[in-house]
Amino acid sequence: MSERYGKLSLVEVLPERTADKHVVGLWKCDCGNETRVAMSRVRHGYTRSCGCLVGENSPRKHGMRYSPEYSSWQSMKARCLDSGNKDYPRWGGRGVTVCDEWVNSFENFFAHIGSRPPGTSLDRIDGSKGYEPGNVRWATPRVQARNRRGAFRWHIKGKTFESHSEAAVHFQVSDYTVWRWVNGQMDKRRGTFTPPREDCHVEPRY
Image (cartoon, rainbow, N blue to C red):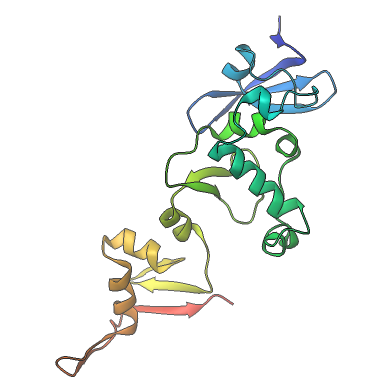
């Protein structure tokens, strides 16, 4: 006999997990929608529908209206869906989307990604995809910088990187050291110039 809680019936247990390692289930709602939610959240009564129940996603219900996670959820929707938002041209205007099951359900979003660690913000793992299950995480600015594709490819010591920060992490040196390998360095005090390494250069991506 399949599991049923509120308006949700379990379709299958998925191989994916939330950011805080909870098992995710695919649930069928009485309204006809399907949603991915952590098994524990449904079994314990935190999520009772796909988001269609009136008031289920009210800030008063989940008590997280002033939380950093709720703020990130609102900001995500604003920059992707609100054409009047100042950031819309760089997000929604360029085709970045938010999956349907998260648009009207903060609980579904939170059940997938979990609590936001200090010093992190919402990041898409694959920049060619939208905000959807399996493609979001909480990441530090440094991790996001390495993940962001710039206008150049960095060829460093026989390896190719999408950013100089990514190369710095690989070779366990500072970002400036990688920049110096590519561009050389002028010692003003001595009046000497150390030329770039022959095995380090950049090329335009486009």
